[in-house]
Length: 283
Image (cartoon, rainbow, N blue to C red; front, side, top):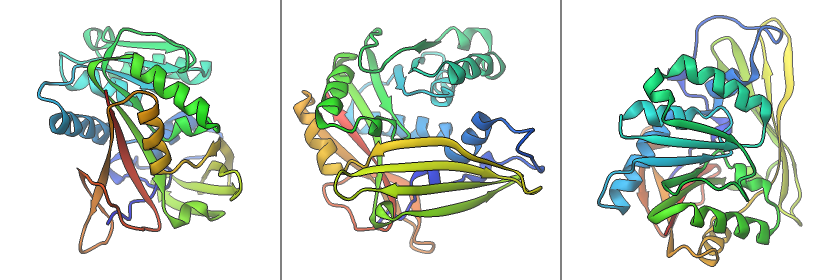
């Protein structure tokens, strides 16, 4: 069983920084990375899935909805044979990522990362081994045909034996309008499931950041999504032309009853209150 919360609800201690912060002195993109992302773990998962599914190394990735491009940058830093493309529509976050690229990577590594402003439905790049759609960003497509169109685009951007790795979240808590907080070093991260419509499946979620001096960055990030389920996602991947759609489910630590960070392909999951999973479209 996996009781891991959606990524937006989790805060990984190794990413924390010491010291107090204030709203005025904080960068929301940095706070997002500290609260939500774990590029080291994402790179490890890509490697594991490739080891399971393919008999050769994965060299090139495309990170759709890349945001700060944290995974793309970590990917190229991991191995001299790795290259990455990041695609996003947001000028502000792309400018932030380009600035951070020069700080986080040396010149040779930086040359192996290409960041593109573009619509993931229409942006064409060189075919890659692996295409990523993480942090549930493809949930922005609320109509079935829109999702299938995106999945078809992803299919066309992969090499012949490429893999499309998506994450998804769910569980009974996902349908509840509630807030969950997590204390970080210097600020508090708040995941706000503000609205859920049981007829349409639409959700409105916010991320807030609160600080020890009482200042706040409310609604620093807004997500207006449709909460797609695993069966729906798998069906749409097959309709888009993928040969199969494999679910990677996280195991459970027997002592904490939380996710143990070990992923395996399964056909049957467990009805946890909150979970994340990876779905792999196999070309």
